[in-house]
Length: 397
Image (cartoon, rainbow, N blue to C red):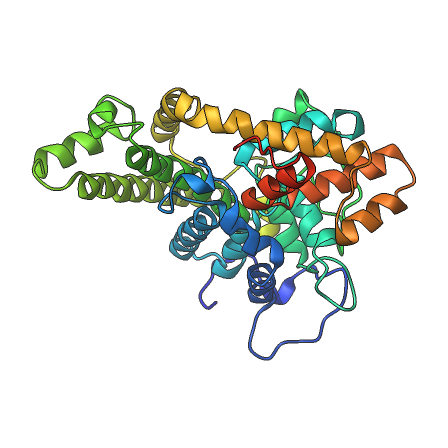
């Protein structure tokens, strides 16, 4: 990419890959990362993994794949405006959900509980396991052999994991650090106490923007919300009022789309303006200056951040914890829990997973194989496995 800022990630100065590769005459290192992710089996499986509404509830609701593509588009747009490396921002965005379980966060909660004796389960770390160990397409190595910068961006999707004294930060203050954190195959130390590149920060904020706008859209489509329910909700309320006043007679779906696109535009433009202010104040001269800044540089302005948190709280109560969502989610939790228990008790795992489970020398190793296998399942495959193991009595039946 031409005309990038001095603080953008430079593919010609990458810290490399664990396994050396030949030079490509047509693609940069970060473009190769993007392509490896898109062609992975884990990426394809996102098509059949839940975002909020389970896959069988309708073909128009978002899946992990469509969510990922939307995050990628926003990440590229923000990166372009800030003169960052669009390819790295895109690669991190495309990979950020590769570790998600079937049935969305419900599956993750169950696996985290089931793995509590063995280091827990963290979908962000699972994405690292996918791209470094579990993908097995290449003849010479396991994993996708991504660049150091791509791995750093995936790992630090939510910022540093520890402080300079190696003490957990953020949500890890109250939870254990994710399993395998200090055993990640990479070309160099991933610097878990520093902040990630601006490209990775861009992918992270794009994830938040996509969640808010598109979960509103899906909730409207599902009939869990009406636009009138949003008129007093922070951030989105003023947009809804304007759309309803300007186009009171158009089809509801068009009104909803107008609200969605205006909400995305508002959030993206706020992030860009706020980041430009941060960068002007700090004046970083390299990507390393960004990592050592001591704070996230790409974020919402204080006013939008406060409103965005209030919007999330509204969605949590009215959508994510609504009975229409929670009834199938509770059933899906049963599926994941049943599968884990059956496999741990000696149920057969297919193909290479069965071989890996039999080769495990400790209960912890066997449990991790099972968690890896279940995490990689799509929603339909998990249901089919449950039906196979439990005489056709699927929990979602």
